[in-house]
Image 1 (cartoon, helix red, strand yellow):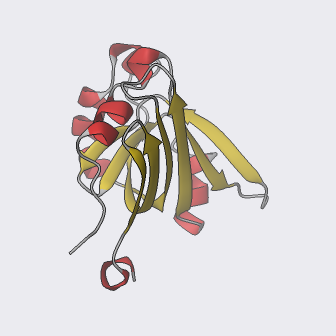
Image 2 (tube, rainbow, N blue to C red):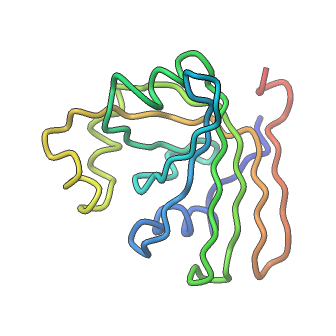
Length: 149
């Protein structure tokens, strides 16, 4: 059982972010140990407790980093989102090539145009916590510890 629910307003904000020119920013620890940030216009809700992204470079940057250090965070804010939503998300990322077709097909055309030869790979993020603030107030969701372990 999970206490994470990315449906509703959260899904509307995430899935429509790139079309509003307001991509989510993903944070991770680079191979040299320094913090790294990356805009992710391909970010999409995959399930009620998972996000998916498309990573164009399979061999450097994010992919080797998450294979060693899977913990990531994402942040999002857009005053143009219905209800002006702010999101802070933490989770664990893993490379999931079996989802390549689905994730690629669900991206906006502008993101697919960045990788027309589909050299990238899908990454799935198991979300452990979400802090959402918007017109409905502040909501915090945390994955139950039994599932998180």
